[in-house]
Length: 189
Figure 1: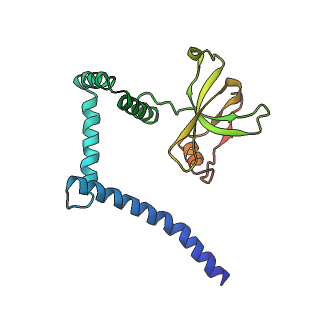
Figure 2: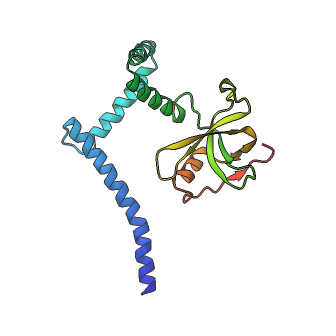
């Protein structure tokens, strides 16, 4: 009976994530199809991906830069909209744009003894412009959430780690459940 229960629990571990993933993907597909009024399942997603790719292609042209500049000037007149747009744009650029900021995973000592630490990513290597020349800005993603916290710490409390950044993100976002096999402190850093 115990073995049967073990098989059942293992089955739950394997089927629930798969079922949730399929359900969420199906909801996204049907929602996009519904917005576009398309009867073919998945056609809305294909059209959306093609549209985003086309915008990215057109965004590399000379005229797109001028249009973006004009659009940014227009948004400067709308305080809340400007804040929302610029924050979203900066966040997207930090992850996937040309100005990637989440390149350096670090281990941050949160107290002087160094026995309380968190994982994060250096986003500003110097805060001299804020009158804090010995400090850095570190973004620490929250577990099981798509948010995070920015901490400002002395450079001496930040220790680069030898890990792939996507592995560190997965480790932090999963609350430490995901395996990060190559998470080890760098020597001499």
